[in-house]
Image 1 (cartoon, helix red, strand yellow):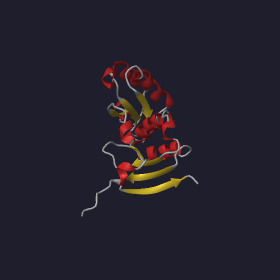
Image 2: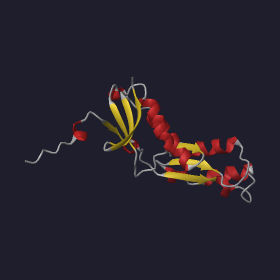
Image 3: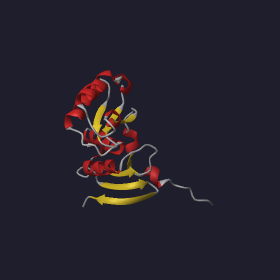
Image 4: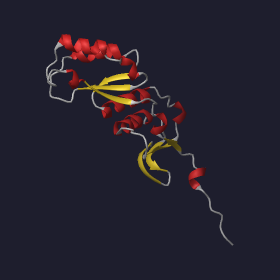
Length: 168
């Protein structure tokens, strides 16, 4: 007589948390201001302002924009602030830094606004593999957010998880 196969994972109270489910929709764009600098290094205020004034900012509608300078130019803070005044009516978020830093900043907002009360006293497994660019820091921020409420936190898949924390 054959024994019935029991799916213990399906019967467990484990709650899977997938950061990919919280990935905000919107194109990520890297805006390099070095193209607007004289020889890629010198910011001439009048020319810079003229370029900003004449640029089609509507193309960034509903995008997440990372402002950067790919050269070793010294950029005054007001330059990024000026571009932000043009981008703000269109972009979902404007950030100074790389696309990876932008992604971390996006997830920082997402995780800060998460209501984790539904995870109180629950065993949680944070899904590890994702098809979307979830930054490493997002996992760290998530653990900090879940730590006060979770009964336990694991990482990976239910069939092969790594235990991280268990409340005593």
